[in-house]
Amino acid sequence: MIRIRHAAVACAAAVAIASIAAAGAQAQSPLPINVGWVQTPGHLAPLLDALAQKHPEVMPHDGKTYIAKALRFKGTTPQIEAMAANELEVASFAPSALALAITNAHLDVRVVSDVIQTGAHGYFDQPYMVRKDGPIKTIADVKGKRIATNTVGSASDAAMRVMFHKHGIQDNQFTTVEANFANMVSMIEDNKVDLIAVMPQFEHRLAVAGNYRTLFTMGQAIGPSQTVLWGMRADFIKAHRAVMVDFFEDHIRGVRWFLDPKNHAEALTIAEQVTKQKPEDLAYAFTKKDFYRSPDCKPNIAAAQADIDEAVKLHVLPKAVKLEPKYVDLSLIEDAKRRIDGK
Image (tube, rainbow, N blue to C red; front, side, top):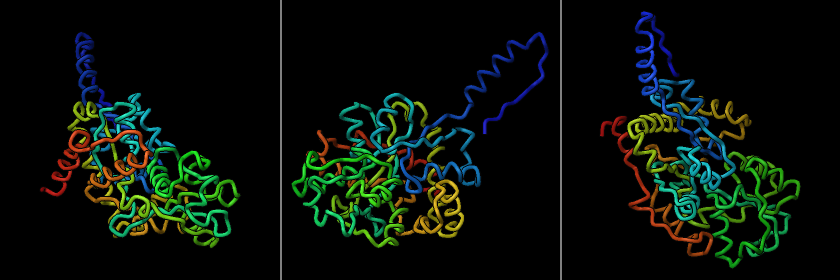
């Protein structure tokens, strides 16, 4: 919380003291940090907002040296424009969106943290599903069909297109229908699309219905994936490094809190309150049926690079990007981890 202090001053010195107090208050004001997210509880940003209010001891710097605000986006690529306009300090980028931010938007951006990984360490592997009685029996049948995606260039979208390209299916050979992940289930049920990407919170609903099957998974398309990572502009990191270490200290503590089995029941309650989803649809959260999240927030840079390279090879991305060393800065999470673990 921002605390405003009041003091009685003598009339003769009021102007001078007020000016000094104002300057001091400005210098000590918490730094606003806008954090982009797309879907939750996969992206923890909205849940961490709730955790900071409920358990301030887990995130002791929140409201003191910084104030974080979770901003929702349709996908990872729209966050490029927001970051370019200085409206977003921490972007949740798919590797493909990160590459576009560097090559198309010419942003001097750095990979700073993990968000979610797909098909890693035996955790959730995102399925792309079709109706059992629908027109798509094999990947070759995708030609001429209606394919749902959250946004072109997102992690889910890029992996899907890589799989299609591997099977000789070009982008102009199917119809892309952009939709929120939450709406895709009803869209395929209403026969408005023929294939959808399924987040773990909706997989349960489709399994109960029994009318759907997995055509392929993200892991089958691109292997274990650094699906989403956090990116920040280099100039913002340089200008606010000390505060950002505070932010990541709190963030690592928050991620570990959600992953700790002893907090599982309360973590699900927070997820239910934030997402307004049914408990049975969230039972998977923070288990091996969920995305993998690094407890140290360490991203898999090799996997992110492999995702970009494969997308360039198959002409899903227009230009190659070499992430290390220029576009990676893990020193913030490393410094934050040392504060927490002492090593």
